[in-house]
Length: 221
Image 1: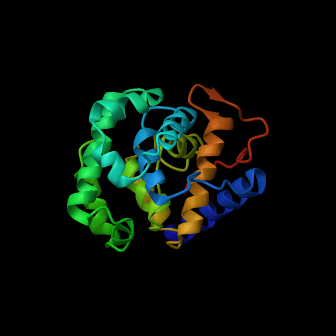
Image 2 (image 1 turned 90 degrees about the horizontal axis):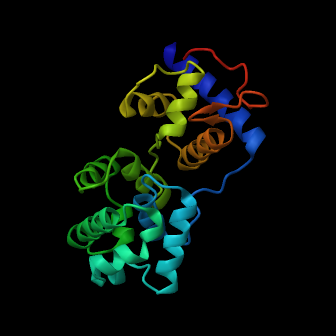
C-alpha cells in the first residue's frame, strides 16, 4: 500500500511540474563524454561556470578522452578555472580519465554496456566521485535508469513533508526507484524538473510559495 501511495503522489507531482515548466531538455551536451566532464565540473559551482569551462576546452579542441588524458594537469586546471576549485577538479578529471582508459580503454560504448550496479560501484571508487556525480554520469551520459538526487530535490521534498529532514541519499533515491518504473526518460525529466523548481521557487534561503506549482501539496508519502 505504501508503495502504491508513493507512486501515485510522485506521479501527481511529476505531472504538476511538467505541466508548469514543460520539458527541460537536460543534460545540455553534444556527446556523452561532455556530460561526464560536466558532471565532474559542476560540483560546487553554477552551470554557467561549467559552460565557460566546456567552451574553453572546445575552443582548444581538447574535449575528448584521449586529448584530456594527454594534457598536463596544470594546463587542464587553467582551462577549467571558471568552475572554481580548478586544481581539485583537474585532479578528479584525471582520476576519472585514468579509470576510463585502464578499465574500459577509453571506449564510451563499452562503458555504456557495463552492468549498472557494478559500474556505479566502480565510479564511486574513483577519488572525488560521489553519489550524485556517479548517478549523473549513469543517467545522463550512459542512459542508465538511475534517479539522481541533489540538494534541490531533497530541499523541496522536505519542505513539502514528503521526506524527513536529513534523509540520506539512499533513502531519497529509494523512494523514487522503489515507486516508479525504471525509465531513463522519466528519471531524466523528473530530476531536471526538481532542479528547475529549486532554482525558481524552493530556494535555499527563500521560499517563493506564491505561484509555486506544488503549492498546497503537503501530503506525506
